[in-house]
Image 1 (spheres, rainbow, N blue to C red):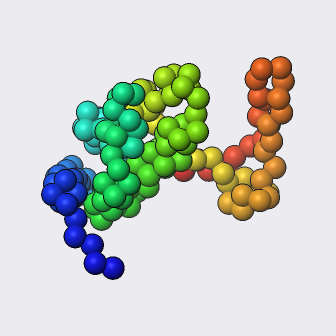
Image 2: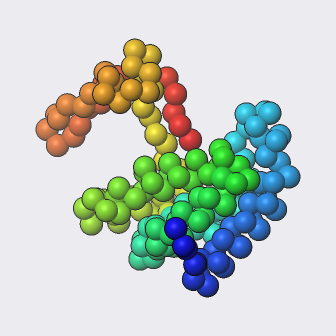
Length: 159
């Protein structure tokens, strides 16, 4: 595939690469060895909109297109696969479904704090009897009036 990125995409790649190399590069081995989450890096990522990559600007996000999003994840993952996954799960599994399928009330309620990184999303799939086989999970939700009650247990939370 012949792909010639536009100037915007080149700038995003260069900026994210510089950030990842400067902030994650020097500590990535230590983070992996100690199984430590880099909150100090998260604090630097928050004002740069890493937690609202595809969230529209009117909700506090960066409003990036899909190519810019992919470039960002690629450059973060090049230095730290763990941080690339963190940002992917937060944006792709947590925030973006609200952008695409949430009600306006849900967007106003959740997206600003997700885009700012005040709240960080996680993916809860793995169960003792199902592993990570989504078709075998035993957790279920039942409607109780206007609310859902979730019953079940998880053994790992990704992020």
